[in-house]
Length: 121
Image 1: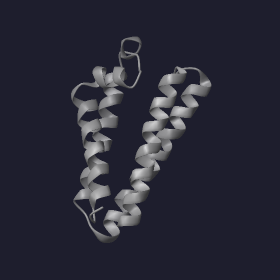
Image 2: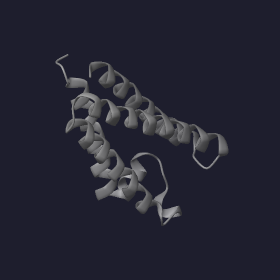
Image 3: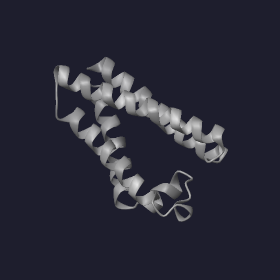
């Protein structure tokens, strides 16, 4: 892979998911197995998540050196917390098993890409 290609892939995924969650929060929630109709505040939370993901992508892409490492470490922390939240939601029963697995798997995938991008940096 070319230098920076993992970072670009990670940023592309973050931007796509982030913009999708912000622009169409109900649809994004449904794609991840969430029931936005059961929680009218869910679109607000999806938009917070979307803005966070875009900020993480933008920060990592727009920086270099130690600053880039810091952005990537922040992303790893967020992705790790997201994975734990997916597991916790499944165990507590407020997320269906499939949704828990989908959300946790997505977060773990981002965690893996972030670790590779950090190594690449």
